[in-house]
Image 1 (cartoon, rainbow, N blue to C red):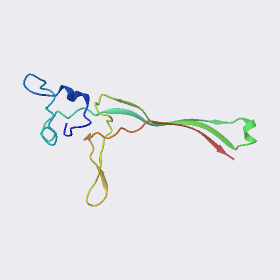
Image 2: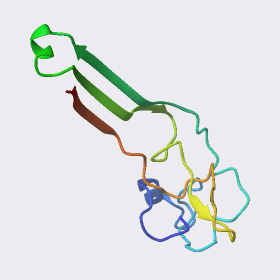
Image 3: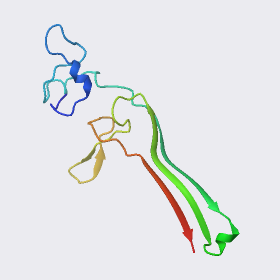
Image 4: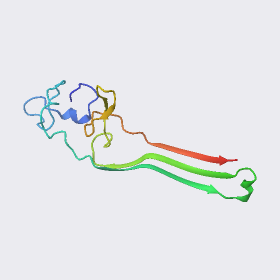
Length: 129
């Protein structure tokens, strides 16, 4: 809880004084709990993901040959399934940063609350004349 906004619901059980939770730190903002050396924020980030898949069928009907040299129907999907026990939004995390040289690098393995990769489904028809 380095920020005092957009926290998960587990912060509702945070330490608020003697006799309360000792497993969730007190809300402090800034660097009170976030920069302390601890394995509290380390978890297994392994996952399996169906990243890209396309299924298509080319129609070979002689009646269509009159109009089209090729007619293909397809459906394509991205990020349809992710299997993981990771508690964050997306186990494939990385925060794009820019160094002094201007090239992008990634802060892999550190989840700073980035939005997950969107799922998408595309249905299409490919026609050649």
